[in-house]
View 1 (cartoon, rainbow, N blue to C red):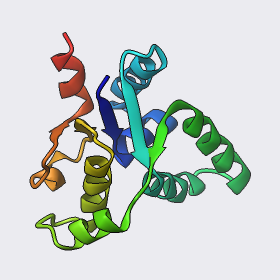
View 2 (cartoon, one colour):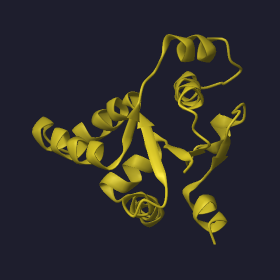
View 3 (cartoon, helix red, strand yellow):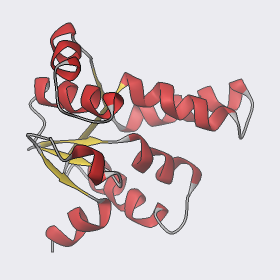
View 4 (cartoon, rainbow, N blue to C red):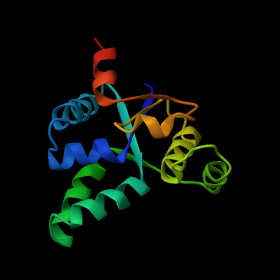
Length: 137
């Protein structure tokens, strides 16, 4: 089963039910729960999600939500090699470069994000949640 990297925006869509994107994000998590796909993200995504969620709730509530998320998704590491590749890359967004090279190191097949424009330099396939779900039909 190919591993799929889930970017911060999709995780937040799922966690805070951001409309009109929440349903597609929830469908992806549902596919993972049914073991139809294998999803992962990076520790950096947890940091980004904490930052956004903390504006909406207490530290305790946010940590609770992130613990729930950690039970639903694999968390991949960020190696020095990935950092060096990101630093030397043509990505315009360094954070996305870090995510990309962490995913490459992990053998990920696909990145799911709503932020496709910042992944133009990707060696991996990059789809929006909607595109991915439609591709499964």
